[in-house]
Length: 517
Ligand code: C2E
Ligand code: CA
Ligand code: CA
Image 1 (spheres, protein in one colour):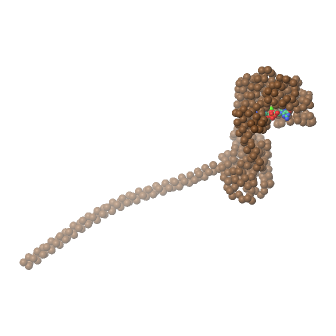
Image 2 (spheres, rainbow, N blue to C red; image 1 turned 120 degrees about the vertical axis):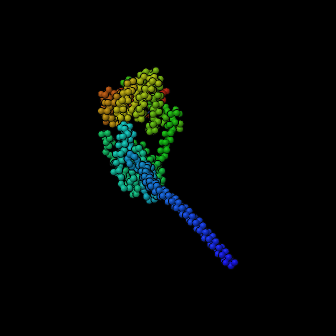
Image 3 (tube, rainbow, N blue to C red; image 1 turned 180 degrees about the vertical axis):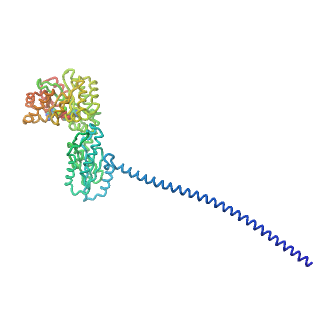
């Protein structure tokens, strides 16, 4: 029994141990398998990570190259930006600072300008630059601007800033000015660079400039005020006959405002029918008969009354309004001529052409059209141009006059003797009449010299087969002198002032020589 129990116990023990060992074995196997699985997972994860790492590295590398590329582009962009800025601030032709650069520079200076400091601005505008451009072409105009820049640079000192602010307009800004009086030397220096001719297209041209001068803070405390005022001074220099310099005065702005007002009134005057033509008789000195009229414009201004052409023709010329106004003059004068010619078929009509009008490439067509429209005899129409206009572009003048001469229209050289007519040119111009300027007549009775000039002009004209008309004849003495000198025609207050058409026609009908108004 005892052994049986011991055997059973041993059996149970062995069984338990076996079970335990087996269980442990099973656990071990499971663990091993788990470890193996984890190991596989880890291995797989590792592989994935490696892949991801590789991808990251690739991404990093491509980002780096993109970054490099971007940095390059950025640098390029900055360079472009700089060159764009340079372009925006530089005048392409002369490579001088342009208006934007100058304005920015002046703005900065004006902000920090102290009361005891003085700066000067000089506005330099080339006179008649348009003529060079029109007659020689733009490339020569550009060449002139480059030459002018080169010369101006020679006249600059360390305190000067030179800019080109418009077509033919330059600015010199001078800082640290000691006193305004000594600035005159600077102006002289600038003017000096224009004292010798410019060579363009193998010919020599003298160029003059109009200069406006303003000082800050005296003539303006802001850059806008200063620029406006220097501009006014330059305009006054132009109005004073060009080739001169003018210091700004506050009264200029008033005048300039008036000028702008007149210009805008002038624009409306044509629509409002405010212009009228007056007619001044022209006499044959032999027969003492009226042989023609000169049409002279007047402006019936709503508040100022009758305004004379000297006060507005130059403004009309400046704005280009002279072209439509001149057309109106020609039409009105031709209509009048047609009317009068029905009773007085030999009567002539002289009409003034301004520079711009004559240079207008449509002038020949315009005259042709008006002749057709009004039905006048072209032989009765005389067009007057001054010798300055005629000689400005002699080839054009000759061609235009010839074109109109073909149909019978003749030309007179007005204000003769005041310009610098060369006899050579005169020979080539196909004009029919010379009008001796009235300045010679003013003093002719006292001045032997003027008498000789008039006689010389008459002889010259006769040799060239031209008719001579003297204008500004006010006294019988003058008339006698002219008649004795073989002058053909005369015009002046001695016979008649310019008068409205109704009075002119009375004069025409009476045909007796007397002063009428
Ligand atoms: P202009 O062509 O030399 O005209 C002659 C000017 O001399 C006229 O002045 C006339 O009134 C003036 N005059 C004539 N005889 C005498 C005289 O005996 N003594 C004095 N002291 N003066 C005399 P007006 O009408 O004031 O014209 C001035 C200028 O205006 C003209 O000078 C001409 O250049 C311009 N003008 C006049 N009408 C026209 C026009 O229709 N078109 C253009 N483009 N210019 C015109
Ligand atoms: Ca005239
Ligand atoms: Ca004249």
